[in-house]
Length: 253
Image (cartoon, rainbow, N blue to C red):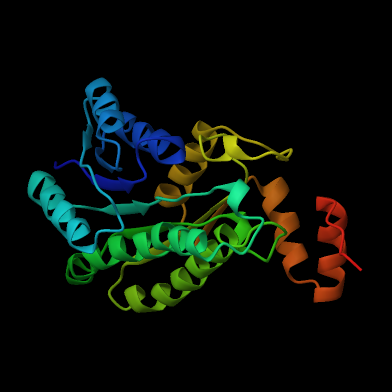
């Protein structure tokens, strides 16, 4: 029986790395992609089932090229997990257009480039899972999040749209909305992160959601995400007031 294969972008650190190890330990072939080749090599050298494929997801042609290599290497791909992202809290407090463009280039268009690279393969195969990693920051607008939050909100909308498109070909589109996970990216935050979890916790929840469940969205920890989901339904005036108090945001008179 042939091993199943998963392709993970953003696989060199954080959630992507933890998920790669989780699937490898379950006997899957795991292809991981990221820009830093040294980190990919370090992971693949220490795990028999993990193989590195360097990639900058902002390069459309390279995304297609790398996926072709993965297909040729493993002959079959069952799940794609697109988790490449960037976040710089120090530059999120102002309307820095160049910075916002860069965030969208990586978070949104990088994911879109990756999806485009696998589109025909999965639609012709008529099976498989395409996973888009978003964030709780994409539920509704938050203070000091001029690029990251909007880019994740765009991914939420994209995932919902593609759910219908790929569904016609029996391909599952899944949205992952993590809360605060301790990664090199969240280490940049200068505020207290409630319900902070490890990448291994996230990997466990994602694996369970992808393999043993069939829901559209995998969100965790529920103690945080369910609260935010309820808040997202509130009228603007109430929502702005609550978020203002919770984040200590003060409107200037």
